[in-house]
Length: 128
Image (tube, one colour):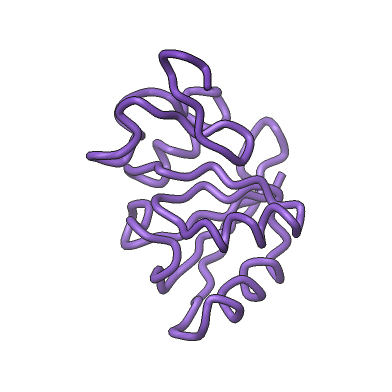
């Protein structure tokens, strides 16, 4: 599986739309097999999308992201898991252990009552 994460240092970049670097990680189900950092540059959102798509990820783990980019990525067949924060290595472990819902990986001030589910928000209390 190929996972992409917009990064700032060793942490998830707070906003994908303005991130300057992308970490691309290959994982074979048991261990990480490759890791590559790519420059996203200062281009338009379309340029960023093409750079991301060119790295061929199946999943994008990110902080905040514009709705327009989520729609584009969804149409490109890339699963987006947004509103994440934290250390990259810890986040990758949590992803593989299906623990991204742990509070330590939630962006501060985000999603207190809502959770992201398959391309849309759901109210965690009512399921709507």
